[in-house]
Image 1 (cartoon, helix red, strand yellow):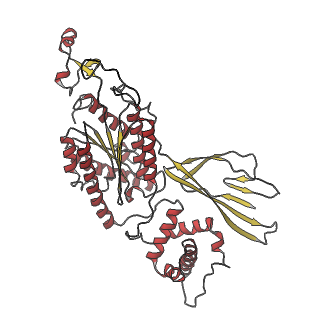
Image 2 (cartoon, one colour; image 1 turned 45 degrees about the vertical axis):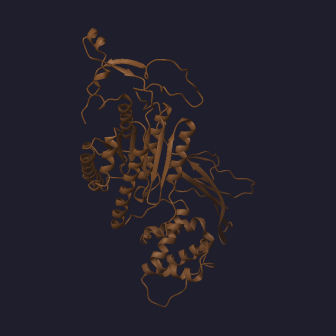
Image 3 (cartoon, helix red, strand yellow; image 1 turned 30 degrees about the horizontal axis):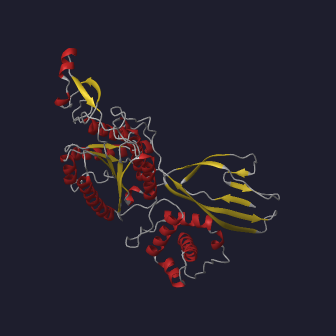
Length: 485
């Protein structure tokens, strides 16, 4: 008996703890009589969302190899996976030490005095408001000194996370959405740790979820729960045309069917009919795969005989059910989106993001920080629908920061555009970096001209950019560190 524990695509096995040499990976070969078998290994989940262990696959055969039977035992176990985030100690803000507003349940004593307490005196930097200059202290020290007050009102942070179909393509851990959830969770961790409330606006082609500003540990984990739910790929929308049927989809579906439904691929149950028409070997193999998949999908989704025949002869109908089968099995989206549909989806996403920004400005109380995590690099030259909303937010003295995820998980710099060797892989990587750098330059020219900040990264650079915007908002200065934008 060969016992194979089926591990989904979202899980990566790091190490295995076993002393028996008969254990190979997540398979256990059983040759003697026993009462229990234990498979133990440490894993890493590649992306947030939901992980389901479907069950185990059994392969039984006699010692001589005359008889063979394969069965899959369904033992589904579902686990919730929260997004990863950077440690708060690594990116702790420098200006604000403690929030003057207390935690829930703690009351302050009423006392007379100014509305804000003096925190410290520091040297003047370009961009500090003139009314904050301590003239007497500056005269004694012969240099300009600035009073720094403790903020009475916390800096509210509003996160806008894009979950469109273009951000969900690719393997788990390599999607653009995974980068954005990491940055959003890291910013929320730092902001909530110092008492700043954090809200979120999660939008895609289907709906928009609004999360009110939250504080405290309970609010932080509620935000992580919402990001985890948002990271799960939605089911196939019947109103959206399915992706074209490709050999990669058929290969993935056949591999999954052979792993989880081996009894449905048995020739005695799912027999391919014999045809008299002459066919090429490749066409005959493709017809055989289509017929076997039609039988498996008909049994899994309880389709009629007429629908099973339609699966064999209509590629779009087959593609729709294969995509549904892969989604239910936890396989990442792999097919590209049509260029025309992608352009239409981009305009719809820009309208939705613009409306969300306007709504956030209308609900804002103080000078807030709007962090827009969206995939804008694919259409960097076509963001004119977003500009009026950005102008309105900046006109109300809010801070707006755009974080665009990078497909290569690194920021396109001058060094990254230089190819290390003349191999095809290095030349292609350098060409992608050059093209991405040009798109980033276009986006910078359009958005930074208005006063917004833009970065292209899913790592620590984006987190530090957002934290610098929060420091500017809480200190009251125009720019950070005296630098002109």
